[in-house]
Length: 389
Image (cartoon, rainbow, N blue to C red; front, top):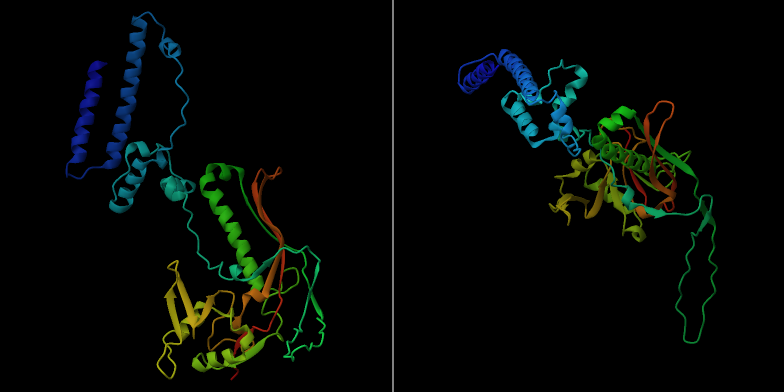
């Protein structure tokens, strides 16, 4: 047996020299031969150990049972190791074969392809990026009880100049309108199988929570812009008769001037433009009669781009149509508005609940929010529409 072990070690050394050389070799044949040599070497060494134990007067296996039990250690995932990531990078970049310890003697199926990617890379789920979170931080947030009637007033008191020792007329503050917030439930539930949840927990746990919050955020922003008010919050653009309308045939300096002229001076502070990025980019490069740029993009304190039209901030969104020659004349493609005049009332903050479906053993993550929203004031709303032919 010792002679055969020597032959096996000699053959392995020859294979090593052959692999390090520059001659072309059949890797599959060599790999199969190495696997056979390893199995034969293990069998010979096991037989030798058993024979040695008998010679010492101990039955086979006693030595192993007499040894103190090693402390249980968590099995390391070799596919999450630094060595495997380096080997995987070499395989992708330079076509080098993966070492034998990272390959199993099994037939790869289509369902196993993901296992070829390192666990760290696999955990970074690649998804389509969508814009959101630009409208939600701007609106007014309240937490009134559902069904509560909130009075509003359209008449403000007027101050008058009076002579010394004289008084002024007492004025009545009339509360002639009111707002009532409803009770609309926004729900997002994601279900995965029990096996998937436990096998890829590190990937799904963070990704699912992020996806759920993003889905609810986009649903809220869509409702703030164009919600129907039935079963969901009412949008700023839902009431066609509210706000001022400006129809324009083309995007130019005069279009902005017309819109600015319709904005009451009382609402100058806080009003912002809202449009798609495609619409805004049509203004970039335009200049007025004095050669001053109409649009400009600067970097804020957080190094994020800040966009302006004639000095007024622009908020980009995907919930509007972009200006084009094919745009319908009834469609709003941009508007001026102070988002603080929109109130989003929430009396149940977003929470995530995890439970198991007893019928299917699926793990369900559920997020619920109860809210309503309405434009409280429309005076700062100026809508831009494309003029008809």
